[in-house]
Image (cartoon, rainbow, N blue to C red; front, side, top):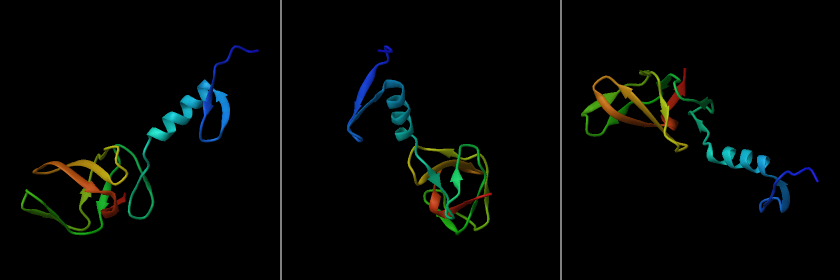
Length: 100
């Protein structure tokens, strides 16, 4: 016996090392956010709008082609948190942006 701890993985029905189970659990917690064409987005990326968007509560329209810098992922697969001049707390849907 090597002294390794094993845990039962219900998905596969097998006993696996605890370290491997921890890696699987961490991978399950991460959310992949993809833009309108399928590019993987990460924190700090720059994106471009592909459609004119009316911002509720701000009385402003963001035009197609507008560059949004330094995005932050929210943990939701379709929402991106970002800043834009004069608009606080702007959240965009990933389907309306393209990675630059």
